Image 1 (cartoon, protein in one colour):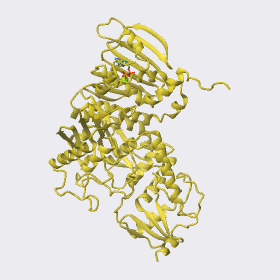
Image 2: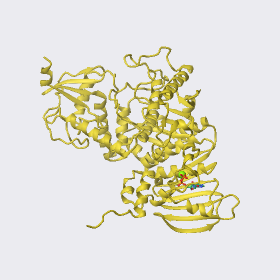
Image 3: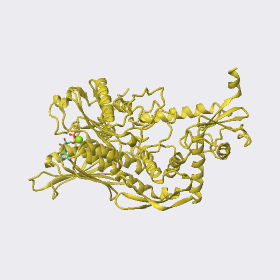
Image 4: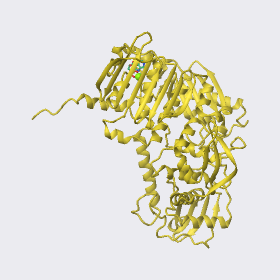
Length: 602
Ligand code: ADP
Ligand code: MG
């Protein structure tokens, strides 16, 4: 018998190792910018092509590298940042594993140009798939420029795995924001395909937050400062009326690094309990300082998961400091609500529209887990949920496909128009059907109806646009503006007539006809926000996804009393839909309580 164990070729081993550090263009950006910061840069410019898939270029004015260092930097475990193993426990720099550049060079084409102050000439090194393809002395400014091209060009499976430009750009901007918020004194700029998205001067934290998230956040920031022996907490939380339904403005930093911490996130959410409807998430920018030996930052290769020694106490400290700040600014009602059994009275800005909370809260959802395996697992769970929904219906073999025609009750004729429909608790419509009692969720039903209307209109180019007499100016944050520019045609097809205005503003001249009395500016911003923060594979195109979001926004809400005629109309419209049994987001619209089930009660 021959021996069968062989060592992997270096190129393969490098690619495998790279997979741990470099998942997408955003990881390249993070590593390069962190290196620039470690090199003492005070100004960093980022130039992307195709959301970083074609190019990520990072230019810094940091300390630069010698000729040898520029070459050495690409070796695995080459680092200038630790010399002995004890150093690992007193890290003050961002990098220290010496793996990033080696990993990037294994899966892309990389060029570095670097010069130290005082050196006459700089060094240029070209490297692709771990092979050095060129090295030369060159004229270049002080500091370092890394150019990373064609990420995963030599690993087709990974390349294929990259998402659309808008999704990858979203990941990049998330990473950019984390760095920008951790290093407010460093000036930073970022552009994609020659469009500048942010240009941030070095400034105070408060100003940095405003530059990043736009002027509207200004009046909503509340300063938080608490110092205990265990932890020092500083930063900002936002007033409840600024809370949104989607994630995107929640940031924790521990000893200067961005971290994810679902447990501490709960502390903040709990502090807002009773003043925010449950599906709203408060924005926060919280900086925790703890003794370096009381935190383990090493439990995850990309270092965003951390473990504190005394998590439970930090939770309590955070909870009470946030509560205190909210109390001080008078945003908490004087009564401390029992959250689980009392009616929640949101204390909100008078202009803010809030919808009644939906009951379908997914407790298992972990917004901080962006790993692929978690996403897959959720998708599987969702599929199982979908499947189980069908068990109420006659046909067992139907596939849960929300886009093809899968009528809810194939053997169940639509409820007769003359039927008596009944609205329950402002939320459900009850109607007798052949096999029992049908329960319809009024909001989801309306979402489905609108969604299919929008789709038809988009196909026929017949979207009704309601022109306004006075265009509404809406101020956007820089990344909202960038997203709008990208989605402009899609918005137009839906019936939005939006034109660029001064600076960060756009003017809304017209909006889709079916929006009713909703404020177009608010709906528009909400759509951008939702689009940015929801990632889903449910839709075939972003147009469809936008249509689904618009349907969600425009649909009647819960607690909206409906007349008998309106209910009748809604039911009738629902059953003319191609897919009446699911909302555009894939949630069930209806359920039949079967006769046998009902009879079982008696
Ligand atoms: P690490 O950051 O963990 O040390 P990297 O692979 O990211 O590992 O970088 C390797 C080394 O290259 C760093 O330790 C540093 O000495 C050098 N280096 C990387 N980027 C820069 C930069 N922008 N300016 C100066 N030196 C750099
Ligand atoms: Mg590094």
